[in-house]
Length: 488
Ligand code: NAD
Image 1 (cartoon, rainbow, N blue to C red):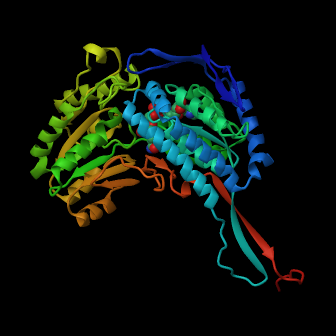
Image 2: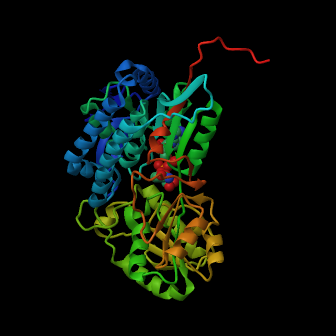
């Protein structure tokens, strides 16, 4: 059966090319569908433009808009198991991880419902007796939301919830590889009573459907999560149209193990930071700096942990690393490891594509630990987006900070140290939008997230998350009974 897509409040066959959703664990087909066509883009945007202006949404009180998001949050929690199973089929994440992502999407919807209910305008300090001023937040209009394949539902909800809460309409284009969760999200919003047209979901190629969407004159903001080169291109499109962007892009995040760190906690945290999601995380801690005095011990511990992690079918309980999203991506990861070998890197563990048993059927890759490379090598500098950790020793703090910041990205960083004065001093010197100290890859929806340098522009999450989809209108109220006097 061909899966339908959600355009302008209706379920229908897409008018674009045929596409297939596959389970990365064994390549089996999850669903066949037709991608959105250019006519679908037109129709979705026209409906979105009408819907956000319609009294049914725009004039609803914030707490009434919030109701829809609260209902979506409840639906997600009621169906957590079903949604997690679908998420695992969609992109191959182990079930336990998928459950966490689905639960986080429920929390995101609830948080932005509350933010919408409590968002206040501003009453600036008054500077005149003959008028008063105030400032209120209003929607932007039609939002183009474009998402990657690595954390469907979570990254989609992070855009759709604040945008709708802010009174906008959203046209969402999910990644080619993961259309299922985005379409499921549309189903949930429909069931929760979202008026027609406020959300459309258009699976399809970025270069065709994504491009048509962002270039459309009625689109008033591009909210993008994905690779830095695509983000840079979209920033140019937005600049031409003079519209805003939120760009959540790539990373090559440094993790630091200080001399005084608790090594049991640090090495387990580092392994989780790089190997969970099979390394397919923008915030993966993929460069590890270890104080030279602890280097051998840390590497021995990490090697043991990496060898014990279970790579396997994502539906099997207890599996730590599922498959990578596709064979093509897995081959790209393997090519980086080959390059490391050629450049003199030592592969302490992993580094070989599994060729036996159930792992041979899917795009699996083992946890891989590399050392002995110079910091300017490609493996140390470029985002690999797989379970590959490269380790380097350091001697003093200035050298460490120089190396950690010597990268085009600035998404996140991790510090393991028993001394918070040292850790906070270091955190202040790192060029990163998020710094974890004695923990890693933990998130709170109330805390802003975004990148420094080429890791992005703008912030998602937090109360600013909703304001990013709104604009301020200032009002001047005359208090004087006399006509305005001309200045002398
Ligand atoms: P990608 O840039 O290839 O694709 C992301 C999305 O953009 C997809 O939906 C794609 O179809 C679309 N797209 C591609 N070209 C387009 C165009 N010309 N116009 C409009 N849309 C277009 O990224 P990916 O491979 O799907 O995802 C992996 C990347 O995402 C990594 O670099 C990762 O670090 C990054 N990422 C960042 C964050 C973050 O919050 N900073 C989170 C997750 C992933």
